[in-house]
Image (cartoon, rainbow over all chains, first blue to last red; front, side):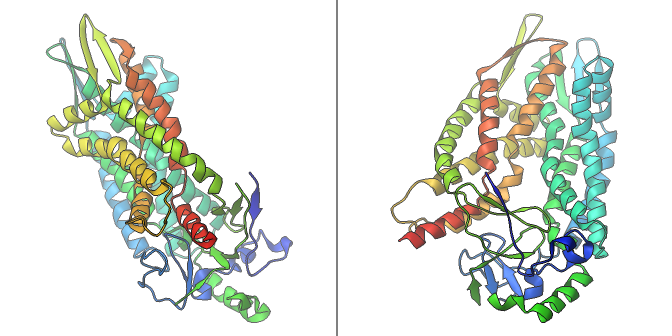
Length: 243
Length: 205
């Protein structure tokens, strides 16, 4: 498989490629007044926001509608749910002798103490670190997008991509608990039941996934700067004649 | 409202590029943010239909047979995935039961069925009701199918249990292993490229 680097219609000298200024000079659909269909990828000229794509009938939007507000709402709810998710027991084990309750962290400590370090690491990363880093990353992304910040745009774009890929893996604990609950049902001898914590934990995973889905990565590149400079590029080199 | 057919936009950063014609297997990447913009997916599409059918068959096996059986002091207990969902729902955490049902059974199954329907070769591509709606559904389901995460969950749960009980792996465990690999390939196909293929089919006519 070969990779083809594409040539932006505002072609840049190679030396400028990595500077923030050069990045800001890329022509975008918003600077050209085009709407791109998010479903089939077709570009439409002279289309109005909310009109339908003539090719696939999806509604056309310049950006995901109300992206920042929705992401904020979901993100804050996720933060609130994060507290019970970690405080309340996710799993209750009752054996012939005793009953004990496990939270997410005590489950990890149990693995660590019993010598399963690899497993403790996997569960620690998937159930504790990933949700925490995901919340932090989304905060960074939303706040910097809101301020139209020019700070590390490429790194932020990569961060968003990473959040999208790894977010799903925090469902791990939900699956572990459900399987244990289904399996260990030996009446009167050993029984595992699900605790309320797992509901909150599942909610955190779903809410952060929804938050990252409602965030529009194009907002990372929408800076006041890019609007102005791309217009001036159009005026200078007139390279948008193909449009 | 007119179509601009010689340009293409990056979904991730909105940069606009001249469209390149790609040969088989080639991928075009955005020079601004590095995301994939376009791909010649014809070859992958041809591999996809047999793979989807095979995944469907393995999916059925994975869900009919017990995943694992445990033995504790002569007492035996086993469960299927559906069995685990049902015991969750009887315990008052029906929201979690619903979440597990959706992410491991319902959504992956729907994804495979829709893809199967969309990929069946047909003599007349215009005559495929719901094409646009189904691609939209595919796009929406894509982040929510989590068979591979479930697979890791099974392994963690088994190691957790191995201290207190004897574990006998069931047929479904192996089926889930295979399903994980196959679904990773199937689901990594971006349904948006079905549009591109649809267009080229129409152009050939």
